[in-house]
Image (cartoon, rainbow, N blue to C red; front, side, top):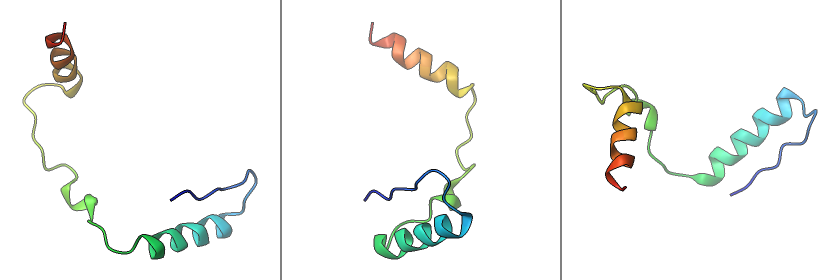
Length: 56
C-alpha cells in the first residue's frame, strides 16, 4: 500500500495517515520485540563484506 504525504503537510495530517495505514494493514507481527536479540561476535559490516567476497 502506498500513502502519499505532500510537502508541507502538518504533523496532525501525517499522524492521521499513519493511523489509517495501521488500520488498513490489520494483523501483523510486532518486530520491535525482536530488536537487539541477535548477538554478533563480529562487526555486521565485516560479516557482510565477507559474504559478498565469497561470490567472487
